[in-house]
Image (cartoon, rainbow over all chains, first blue to last red; front, side):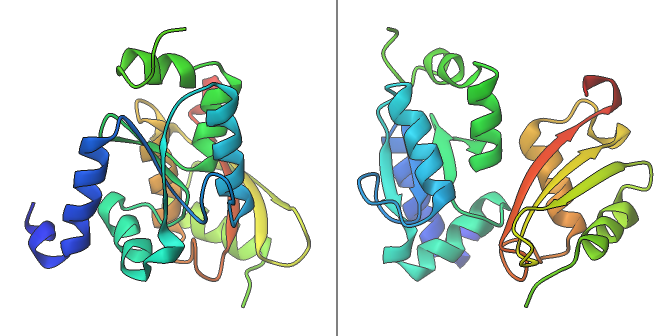
Length: 114
Length: 79
């Protein structure tokens, strides 16, 4: 993508979502979330026992802005499953409440069937 | 900086003239709202695409002056 050349952060983001089945770009860490919306997604993923990699965008301001550009999505957190952007807190919660999230991750090959 | 519910609604309506829009001020601070938007324009679109349409209507305010907007979107008969 041309934008990778323009914004090197995009390459870093792409590498993370390629290397990890489930990636959550968040404020803070899974153990110490720094925002209620990020904490809610962490809680949902933990409750569903979906292993994921948490990436703290507060640790890197270029990542914090670059991720919004990468997905054309203005807020954090952002959840990716098998390289595909799933959504932010609203969509993850909506998918959880309608029992879609676990199936989505499992059918995408993101978590062991349990 | 903050926004009022009326401004949010009129921005969304400008982009989605047919929409039924419900805005709730969650904390009274002009920064935390919930919005439920129903529009034919969402039909056949994924949730991400539907939400991106609303964020587009807000013209860059989402995540800026508007810190939090709990968003729910749907086409008319999915409500």
